[in-house]
Length: 100
Image (cartoon, rainbow, N blue to C red; front, top):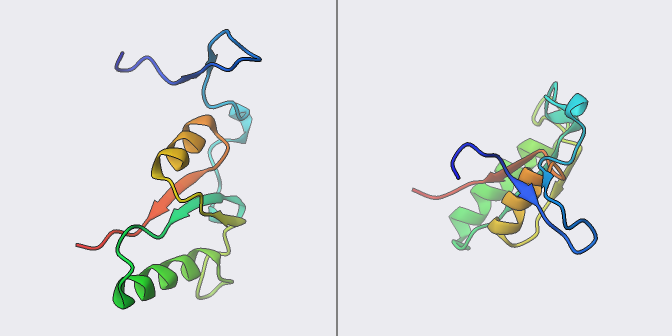
């Protein structure tokens, strides 16, 4: 159902729980310095693609003035898992650099 929001069901909590589970007071982030970011390398692993992605991740994780020094980067190897963690509120955003 469009516009109905996202819900989670588990064996321990069979009643639907509205997502995100994180406290509403924790949102929005004031910047990326406190962000937990899910990242992915994607399927293109050619030298140019890897270099661009590594540079992009370095900008997220690096110290200023070259980066924003995000709190942490996580790579789960699955876009579906990353999206699920964002909707759950377990990570703050999902970042993936895609080649044109």
